[in-house]
Image: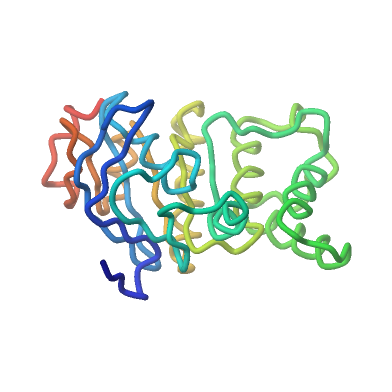
Length: 236
């Protein structure tokens, strides 16, 4: 089975498993550099299991997946950190260390992914915080920030290693609509700079406001089309 060197993600004839059960069968899709792709579907339809397979939290048991230059079939544990340096992963529940400042949260990720020089770490920290609109919060604790600001810190953390793909799992699910819209605009800006984004979401109003390609998990299959081809009411 061959892959083009172009796609950021290539999934071929893959079945996704969760706890031994097939939740998505024989799925095929590519994500190109700079694409913005939504992942929708009912709870339990396989969205999170697909994302977890892409970042090797679940094993790839059937089919072929390549993320960047990394083949996920039988990936060794020692290669998983390298894979995750190629990705930026953003969760709904932030997963920030509550006993550390914003800077310390980001420095932790840098050290874990091989950064050594303090001066370069400080420079990169400043760059990513400015990019997400939080240039003055590095010394604050997470509890001193609003929910929207905490999510921006999480996005900054995901951008540390200049990933080829951002994977976002319900990133605005805990935010009010106005704040969620601001976060989505930030994702659009990041995407416009060339970073591919795969976002799982139940927020169909955001998809309508910012139309794009949609992957829909339904009845064990993955449909791939533009927004207007889908009845999103079936994806709640």
